[in-house]
Image (cartoon, rainbow, N blue to C red):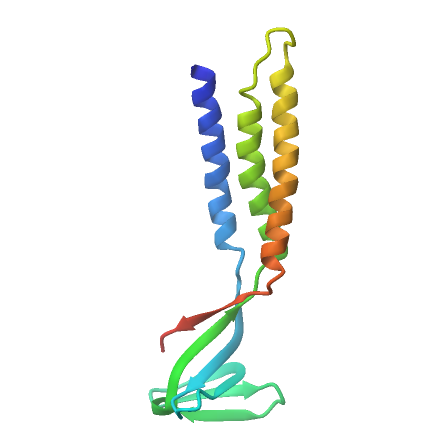
Length: 149
């Protein structure tokens, strides 16, 4: 029973170690998407270069600056890109640690030491599957997140 408790602690530590990594998966980007209140749901993409109490200034993709009245702005969203390397690391640590811990619980009285082999295979397989999942999750490119000004 003591061995099971240590395995659960190890699996929990792997999951907890993945949490700070997961927080870093989506670093901030300076791209914004502004939705206007004009009824047609016009969206303007650019980089936010200035904010004042009554206006927003964007640098558009063509290099021109555009100043918008804040009363005309319905919503502002920032783009957050996925960090592929950290996504892979989170998937590997989280799933590999859990499957490695579960593999270490396998027992066979006829084959002493088999739990180490199961733990290693569980960690490697979990790491590979988790890394693939992280890579697939990051392939989406990122997400838009609404911000308040």
